Image (cartoon, rainbow, N blue to C red):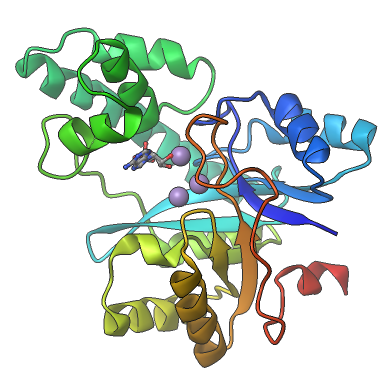
Length: 276
Ligand code: AMP
Ligand code: MN
Ligand code: MN
Ligand code: MN
């Protein structure tokens, strides 16, 4: 069995439509796939239908943008009921914030001589969530930097002209929505927040107290050293362990779909909760 519990489709900033993502994951040998688009579950029904055709197990999921002590922290909700009203109400608020932030990003870029950013990003996003990735694609198409990653560094991170600070959902509130929707809350890619060990410890204590159950130990961007330190944190805090590539596209992927290092054997995998 091969689990990949963190992936994106065109419902947010992924390159493949949900059905195509499922076909690609299936072809890569994934048997259990979670679709975790940013702040929405719009792709789940299409992915679910294709998964039934392929014989792959699709886990309905979402990656929620939250703010914790001024930092952006991502909480993945696995095995959620996408029809839960409380969850959808919360996500609706984030969707409104995404649109407002994108407009402001467009204004700020225009003040810096770059016109049309909002319209271009909105058109690239189509019916999906509008994200910084869409702005990055537009800026890269203008030849403003060599790669999407470079565009982020020059324009879209804190302190740069296109960056707009947003207070996303409260971390504890987001865990609450996931639990109300019957899901399992996973703290995504812990190594990406650049927290000291003591701040990460504090985050994990608060996350667990709020009802969070798992840590993404094997994450797309994690080095083997990161995996070891996340594994120790999971042991120390009594958290289950999750595994996800954070796949977005074949060009901009840190790891290919389903090609992930194994979880250390002594950890309890997050899927033990729903396979019981
Ligand atoms: P947003 O949630 O709209 O602020 O966009 C965040 C998304 O941008 C992340 O989910 C990543 O997909 C992407 N992203 C963030 N930082 C980088 C980076 N340095 N290089 C490439 N993509 C990035
Ligand atoms: Mn993304
Ligand atoms: Mn993330
Ligand atoms: Mn992600």
